[in-house]
Image (cartoon, rainbow, N blue to C red; front, top):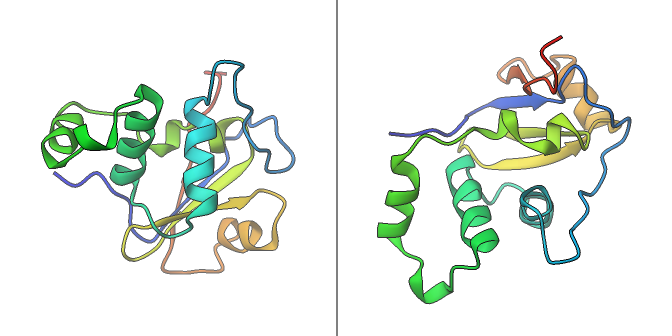
Length: 138
């Protein structure tokens, strides 16, 4: 089953505290999931699909060696439902919109950028807008 987005833009959540795109901080003992997500997506725009990014974040965060990664681990990882990037801290807390192109590959856009505004204002008629999940239930 394919869990990727296509021609979609995830806007920041309605209660996102960031007024600008912020780099998620690492912890003293290593990277956080949001910092890994950011590093991969920011350094490699339009390279990863949602499924590929979530998997890569998982294996890096868990410290799984390259030799143990493969299609069997990828399939096993995706057997159980995972939260999509609408639940990511990038659009919920750190001020990043996420665009998925026609191939399902993603790129980040900071909330203050003209590109973000163009997506959010509906200037790309073929791109569906989806809000990130809210931080609170209010």
